[in-house]
Length: 383
Image 1 (cartoon, rainbow, N blue to C red):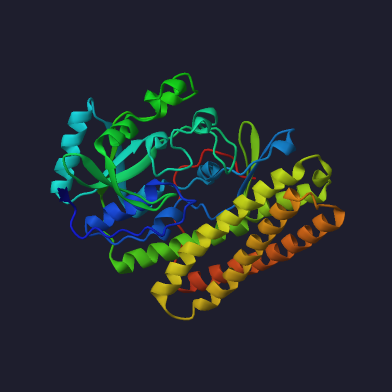
Image 2 (tube, rainbow, N blue to C red):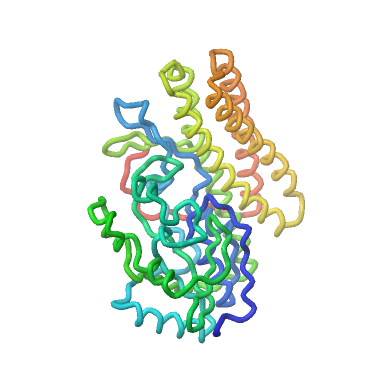
């Protein structure tokens, strides 16, 4: 057997982030780079709430983090100083040769494929529901076709050793046969041949990470501060951006729009409770993203910043409580005007707390001489 020596990755990672982030994080570390998972996953500004409302169809409003690109910032890889290049191998054997060469060089090898063939992936393994619901995520209901990524850290004649933390926290071996089926990907599953955008799924896909800037602890800490400052600034700015089909609300404007729809009688629509439950679930997730980066920043700074952490723990806790209350009461059909009034009051109070928090966070970070992330070329009109 050959393997990467002393490979001890973190398995306790948030299961709501993109599956590639822990792999990139570990790959950067294996190259001797300073890396923090919370920073990588927040450079996309996923902590900023975004609520998209189709014109004339408010009941079809949705939360879609991919719309954060409308704010005009650069790709997160540019801020961290890396580049990513995806490619495919013509045959399985050529791919295995590349896997072996990478491991011999003590480098993690990233591969894409279909979770439909992974036995430890209880949710998907040979599940007819995987075929039926292909492309529809459980969080938004938006159709998105992509690849699942895992990394290979060892191999022998019959098995490969993989690191696949999301969502199963798996670090162990799979047979060569299973790996082959996985690596062929979704495009090679016969039942998916006619699915929309199936051509976006890679066959024997891999990704190479090139480090263009090596971070010191000092430069990483500065990037932490810039990211936190940018998140707070965009939250308070509350941009409203019009695209072809929707109006997109960001930050406190997103919170305010969701609150406004609830206040305007949206809650009287049949089955609205299920939609609102999903919206609050996703808004709660924005706060989870922010909490992760704030925790690491506080730990690294080790000074008075726990004041901010304790305050934000209260805010995140309120979103947790609201989401749990709505989910339970909607499921049990215990929602009435009094219940919604209570949720609205709680939501309004939490919004005020969050606005105050971000105002003070901006004042604190600006006092350290920090500025926000620089933007790229914007192409949308901001109202």
